[in-house]
Image: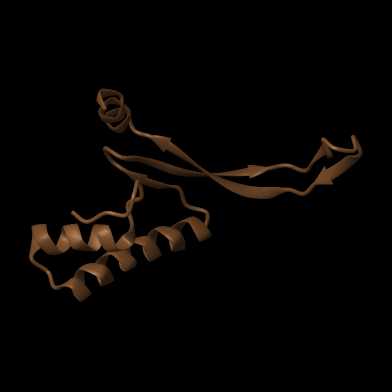
Length: 99
């Protein structure tokens, strides 16, 4: 696979689908785009996304809190927000640990 240095891209995923499944390059890229769009839509709607054997994208709502500017020491309010975290599956953690 002709991958970018240390980065797996959409094109890399599409190329793998093209080789392994036999879809055209355009169909493969459309499939990748469709999956990513579906994941984004689900998270935009407040749903977590779980991919068995890979991990979970988990949404968390953070409350408003007081933060501090590290340079000046001035306290500033940090607005409430929704953040996304990724939690790797045990299978993925084991694969990464093997190197």
